[in-house]
Image (cartoon, rainbow, N blue to C red; front, side, top):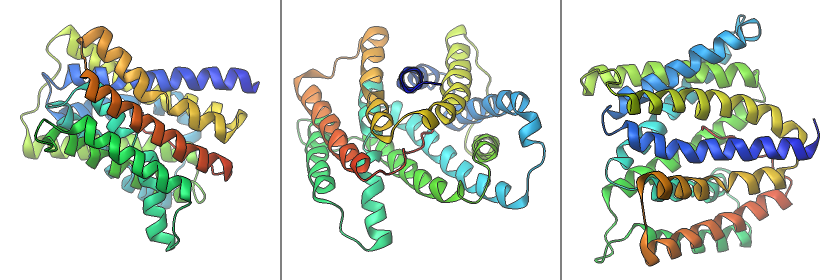
Length: 293
């Protein structure tokens, strides 16, 4: 596969992940968050497990343990996003989740006890300014939906860090597939404890669930792992940063979401900060960050 082809594949992956915010927004209007997570991850696990059954048939205890940890984080971040989308817009959720790019180096700085590079610090400052504009009301109070989305971004960052460690010790394909299965189990447990189980009752809800499972999760996981091997970290970082842009485009086109002047300025600052942080990660030759889709 050529680098150009790999980059175009990653564009479609980023497009699919941008679409996920629209689908989650549509689905959560009729399906509770834990219920949605269980359906999404369960279907994605079954499909990918069937496709790659010969490669995942034999699995060891360490892979299952790591998959359980990653699956718990996936369940938490997906559910957090869904709770956030109950009271915030799909376009805002996309930009809020993109802050993961700056949360990762901040967490790594605490872990390694090393100060982050000056470009990381600059990116954090720019993103914080954008967050203030994007998520604040006239009274500059952070709304609850934004809090849930930022909590999901934090879990996403933790997932990236632990996954980068896990893939050095176990098969990455097995880890990616089995974590979906565990995420579905955790979602099922949350659904039985906190919610009333339901199945999609309308065509819109079915499209949302199947789109999230097949396009955003199954397709995203598989094609990301294939394409990233044939391109550069710089390209991957840039292309993945397009995700919130796609989310805003889909939200505008299908949900008529308009963030307003203050919101668009805030979103632009977040995107600028993300690019600055990506530039630092790419110039250091860091491996591309995994995505949950």
